[in-house]
Amino acid sequence: MDIRVGDVLTMKKSHPCGGARFTVLRVGMDFRLRCETCGHEMMIPRIKAEKNIRAVEHTDGE
Image 1 (cartoon, rainbow, N blue to C red):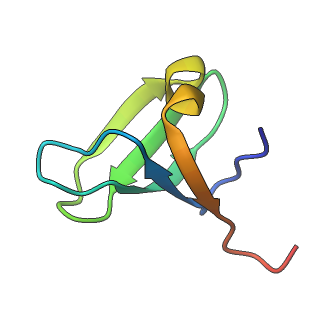
Image 2 (image 1 turned 90 degrees about the vertical axis):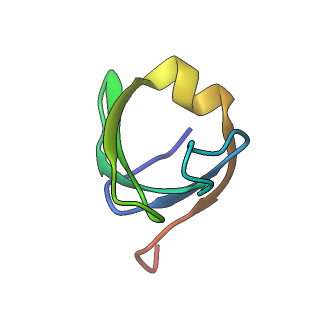
Image 3 (image 1 turned 180 degrees about the vertical axis):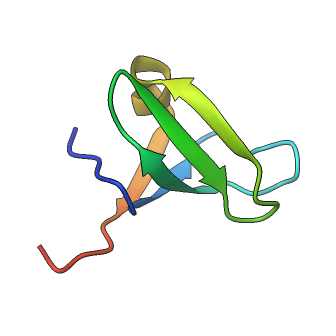
């Protein structure tokens, strides 16, 4: 799956604050994501994150 820094992910499960959209801050074996609703940052293992992705919005024009 092609996930890059700056992409916005819509997840199947929402954050406890109610938001389901997350901005990607770091990629690698783990993803660092920031909730767009409350601003909370978290690290999630890549495998777990990729299973829960519903949609990806790429920010650049590629």
